[in-house]
Image (cartoon, rainbow, N blue to C red):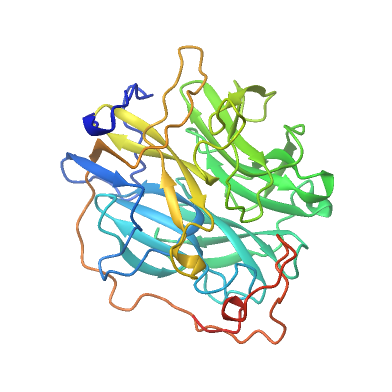
Length: 384
């Protein structure tokens, strides 16, 4: 792996012995790697020049391409019925193609945090998401697709998690190396507690086994595995906060714990966020030296115009691990470069799935985060 020396940081990259790449579609062409630069100071754009509007989601390498899933907010303040999930794909983490909107026949409600993974047993791509028929009546939904680009068909809009009665909030999907799935999520009525729940083999529901509370007063959790250790990362609540939030690191030898706290990788000595972003995911990227783990965070309020969908997303240089399994603090670098795996080139989708914006008869006029007024131009009237 090569890192641009101009930024003067040492990349002691945390890598496994070989690249972990999901290959659901059989044999692929010869594996190739290339030095690819990731830029954190310019907006990520698709091949048409449009700014990529995909927030609080995930990034995966599926069947020969990178896929970025996220919530598109457009010109809204983020609380409207026209929030929609989008997917973009790329062969090299730079050239992004809009593949379409992710969920067919999305019901009326407010949608956040789409997380996708592949189920090798059913050969289906599975999408878990957090949604509110009414703010903040939290529910968890799941949808499936035969392809990573979707669109996904809803399988269940009210997954009966063990804590369903306590209003589940945001969460994310993790699939272990043996194919077992887990959902790490916030439980609103338990003081924004963080729990992890094992899923059924089809990844469409709960198996009924749940962890103890890892912490309270928290949200935006992510989970991953490196070697024989499991990592759960999250921090304090951050309702579209511009200052960002931390990223506490909890480590266990079993996916359901018990977990122990190993520090916070996104807070400095003064307890301020190193990167003014809220965590969304830790991506596992194949490189010439093995898997690299990339921390992803949304920089709310970072746009230069009034369009929320133009907020930046920060992608860290590969995380650096200690011999004991801890993670070193993030570095707020404007750019970094790595020998990442190249994916397949292909033509853009001719007719990506898009559903029309709806007129909201009762758009919010007060911001639930700040309790201040929502400017008229950011009220969700259906305009995109």
